[in-house]
Image 1 (cartoon, each protein chain N blue to C red):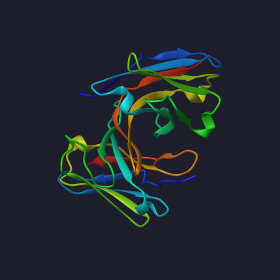
Image 2: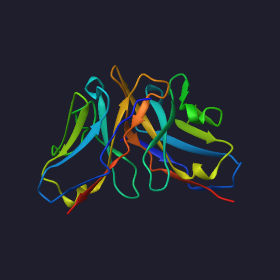
Image 3: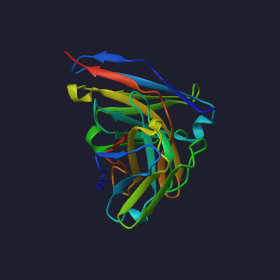
Image 4: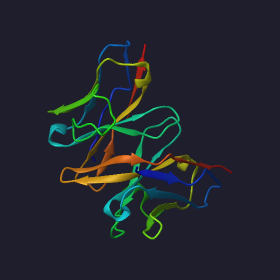
Length: 121
Length: 108
């Protein structure tokens, strides 16, 4: 069965960086992309971007350009998301999700369990 | 950028039908996906491509999409359906993935 297992919770100071990993199993990793979605406390879902599992091409949301980097390691079927220059409003649960691509667009059929990132001085 | 509008909350009695709307400009021309999120849990896809259900999702969950409104319909609502529901589309803008603001379904 498809599983996405994320790394554990992190506490970071403002200005620091965080890297969250997402290990995939149960499917051919290079056949799907991985997207990252975050959710601030009590708020809705915010798409951050995605990475193509086959060729590593990325597409980041404009407001995070320059602060976020998404990578994959196909040898371990693991995707990672690094966010730099952390601010207090980056405090959120970060989810990875498998991207299902069709001619109609993209959606997310499997999700990781989420990783809480807390930014606090 | 494209905007999806959902009502903040919907309430329904057990056994009744809940309808959660997702409004967007000519949303009927796009493919709409719906996710259920229970407190403290990751989202789960309940409808994709307007009206298809992933494996394991009860037939009580259905979707439709026309004009400027997409609708998630939950028939014979159960207490376990209480959750936040989000719609999502793919848009041809620079930030192509758009989520609605979410709707909290309360089962009375």
